[in-house]
Every structure is written in C-alpha cells, then in structure tokens.
Image (cartoon, rainbow, N blue to C red):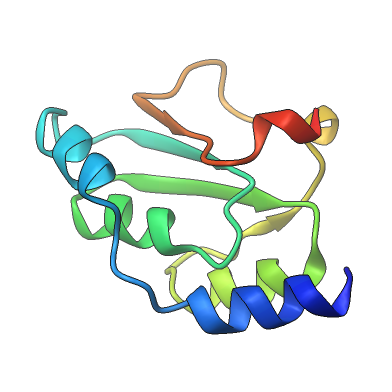
Length: 102
C-alpha cells in the first residue's frame, strides 16, 4: 500500500459514519449477516455491528484489516474479492469505493 493511502486511512479511521449509511441501516431489520467488501478502516462495519449485524468484513490490504479488526468482535479477513468464501446470502452488503477494484 502506498504511503499516501496509509496516511489517508490513519486520518479517516475514526470518521463518523456517512448519513447515507446511517439512514440505510435504519431501514433494515437489525439482525442477520452483513458483508462489508473492501472494509478499509472498518467505519461501516462498526456501524453495522452496533446495529445488530454479524459482520463479515474483508479488505485486500493487511494494514487496513488490522485497523478494522481492532473495531470489531470478529477479525476482518485479508482477502481479495475473488477469494471470498462466505455464506450464500447476506441480509446487507456494503461496498463503498470498492467495486472499481474488481
């Protein structure tokens, strides 16, 4: 990971959740499995977990997996999208700024 990304994620790891995410989560049943693709520093995973979801978070960058894992009860996974082995269904999927890496 380039130094600029390390710096960016250190600066944003404790940012408040986006209004869009908070609103979307409020519309969901607060139970079930949630997938956070490209979890980054884990801010979205944290919001989903606080709202009752069992989180399956993953990122391709080991440093970000460590940061996200420190915020969650389950360790985030160091995986690329094409390496995911997960339940066949999820109750919620979050992928902010991630799918363009596929």
